[in-house]
Image (cartoon, rainbow over all chains, first blue to last red; front, side, top):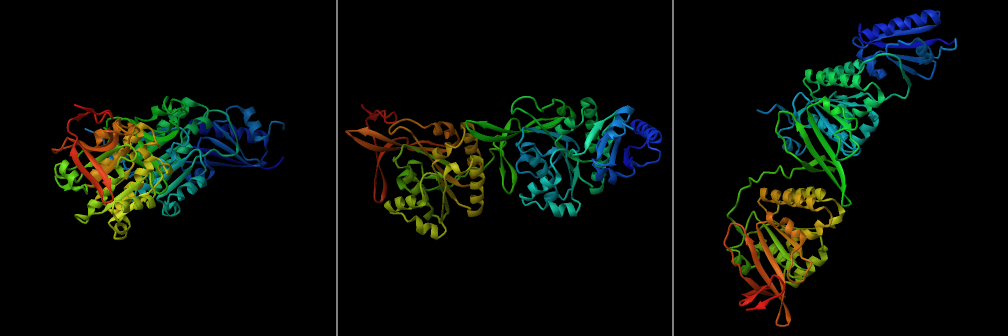
Length: 91
Length: 483
C-alpha cells in the first residue's frame, strides 16, 4: 500500500468538524497502520491555507496522494463511502 | 426617509438608482447569459478603486480568475496594478477539477472565512459574488446552501461592505432567477436584459426593487462601450429642467426668420419635414450658413449623403462648406446609420459635441437613423439627444423624410414631433398643371409665427420664399382646392 497524504480542513470545534476528525482517526487506526500522513487544518486559524486549497465547504478531506487528487466533503459519517472515496474499500 | 446609498460611479446608474446601491447591503443582479452582469460587477469594483479609492473583493464561482483578468484588461483597467496594491482581491471559488464526493453534513464556512479574510485584509468597501447559481449546482442541499448564503450576506453587511450578487435567469421576462431562491437573499433586485426585438438587440437595466428607497421604474437602455464598459442611457430619468433661452438664432433665410417671429430660439429643436427633393437639405445648408452672422460653429451629422455630395450641393446654392470647415466653423461627420446601434450613435454624438463644442447641430436625416431600431428605442434616442442638446444650449435642426410626394406625414415625424419646438413642413403642391413647392411653419413653441402656407422656388442663389397661397385650401392633404 502506498503512503496516503491526507489533509482535513475543519472549522474550529463545529459538530461536523469534530465528527469528521473522529471518523477519520478511526479509519486510519483500523486500516492504515501508520502508513499515512494526516494534517488537520483549522480554517479559522489558517485561512490562507483554505484560500490556497480553494476550500468552500467544511469539513473537506483532500487525498493529495496517490493521484488523482480526491475531495470528500462532509462529516464522513458513512464509513464504507469514505473508504471507497479514499480507494481503500478492497483492502 | 430614504436609506443610505453608496455612489457607484457607473455612468447614469447613480442617477436611475437615486444615489447608487443601498449602503451596507447586498443587491442581486439577475440576467440571462451574456447580459453583462459580470461586467457590471467588475465595473462596480473598478469605479470604486478609480474614483473613490475603495478596495474591492471579486469572488468568482464560475469563471477562472485568469480569464476574468484577460477580459478586464481590454477595458483599460489596470487590474494587475490594483491586485499588486491590494485594492482588488480575487477569491477563487470556482469548482475544482478534483473528483469530489459528499459524505455527511457540511456547511460553507470555508468560503465564509476566506471571504471575510479577504475583505478584512484589503479593507474592502465593495464585494462582488459572481455568480451564485453555480453554488447551487455545485452543492446539492439547496435549503442548506440558501441558509449558508444568507449568513454570507449578513456577514458582508457586518463588515460594512456594499455588495453585488449576480445570478442567471433563463428567460428575459419571467422568473427573477433560474432557481427561484436567490431573490430571497436580498431586498434589492436589479435585472439586466439583452432582448432581441424586431431583429435588433436591446440591452436594458431595470431596478426591480430597492427596499425602503426611491429609484426609477422600468427599463433603461444601456450599451457596452469598449472603453467605458456599461453606459446607461437615462431617458425617463432625465429631468426637463433646462433653461429656456429668449435668444434667437437665424435660420440663414431672412424671410423664414420673419415667419418664425425673428428666428429660431437658440436652445430649440427644429424639425424639417418633407418628401425627397422638397428642399430639406437646402434648409439645412442655410441653417449652417447662418453661423456666419455670429461666428458660431456648426456640426453636421449626415446619415444619407456623402461629404462630396453635400459639398457639391452647397456649391450649387452658392455656399462654400469646404472653406467653412477649413476655418474651423463647420465639422461634417458622415456615417452610415447601420454602422452601430442608436445607443452607440448617441454616445458617439455626445463625444463629438463635447470635443467640437458647436452652437448648432444639423442632423440629416432622422428617417435614415430610425431604420436601425425599434420605434420605442428610437423615441428614447430622440428624447436623450434633444435633452442633451438643450442642456448644452445648442440649436438643433433635424430632417425627416415623408413617403408621399405631396401631403402625408412620416412615421418618424408622428413619433417625435411632440419633442420638438419648431416644425417646418415642406410639401409639393400640384397646381395649375405643375408641381409647386410650399413651406409652412406648423409650430413654433413660445413665439408668434406666420401660419400661412407659402410657395417657394430654388435657384442658384438658394431659396426664395414667396407669397402665401391665397384662396387655395387642402394644400397639406396634397389635393388643393381653389375656393
